[in-house]
Image 1 (cartoon, rainbow, N blue to C red):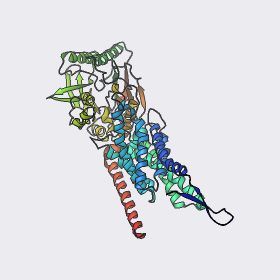
Image 2 (image 1 turned 30 degrees about the vertical axis):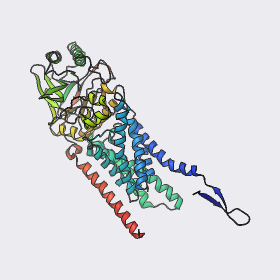
Image 3 (image 1 turned 120 degrees about the vertical axis):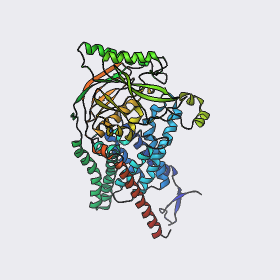
Length: 536
């Protein structure tokens, strides 16, 4: 059937018909889709290594405008486009060495969670104070994404893009869920405030109650962040410790960073011995303990005597305990392990990584993945086993909590080191397989958020960079470059008090999930009543 437009301009009173312009309709329909994708891209730009944290606010304001009043089908598609615009560039580093297939597959799955949240946001957008319900739904989506599938993938939490922002102190109030909620609420609140002004001008009457509520959804998160600054401090509570962070560098970047036997270990031992020489010369303060990165020993020191001797020699040279990262085999199982190496007693304690990385350290659905690409199964020939106990090393009297690399993205994996007595935290990492991508900066930002969340000094020893020392207020006091051998030595504050976020644990996230569920319930109830009133 041909769609036509009518006109009443003919002198004989009859109506003539002219062809409609379907391209205008298509263009109008494409605007929300393009806006959704662009808002997702804007959210990505707000993340490190850029310091444009404030761009998250217009990104969510735009998302709120795009989704408001949409049907569930439209919201699903628009939410998916927003997710793609955000996650495709954010996670491009996942395909640096393995190709675009795994990267695109990961983003395609993760964007589904964003799409489902988009449906929920559209549903609650007709409710009073909808930004509150919508922001809670976003955090509920993050909570699910951090747990499923395969143990979850929290990368891209809104909180992790706010290390340089004014909202950061909210991390000390309720962790990443409360920090993320404040940012998203403020963004949706901006959308509603603008909408109230625009509609008020059109109608000639400003609804003061609704406008005031919209302003509060912007003002409350900002005011809360300002008040929470009282929880942020870099002062020592339990003395200080002089810590050394070693970045030994690797012979080559990529998946074959450890192809040359013992080379990675030798690099880190050499840098430690160089530091020891500077200490003896009086150029650098003697460290109380030394932190090496994840995989800093590329061969198992319990299996190979030469690796044992190299590590033992480095510990004796610096005359301080070292936390060494290695892959060890025990009882036929592989573990990503941190080893506490005493200069006199040798290895005295170990910590096995508990949150191992799917498709990196173990391979879910191995037979299916092998059927798609046999090369992928060969990259993870044997699955890593999980540790069962929190990692807290007592190093020269200081309790150091350990969250190995990927674990820094998981709230529980960092928190329970503090609840088990950690006075500072270390995040030993190996980013050599991701070349010079943004991954290392994204992970550094996570560690900065964790520092404020738990009010602890956080060190980030990385094989190839960027290594850093972060004070409890989230400030990066020292950092290295990438793919250089270097060391950082600093006297850092030790703290023992617990922030509200540490004490509350998962409770704020549970409350926000309950708020999200309540909002959905109200929206569904309102929809049912509306259909009954219309006799549908």
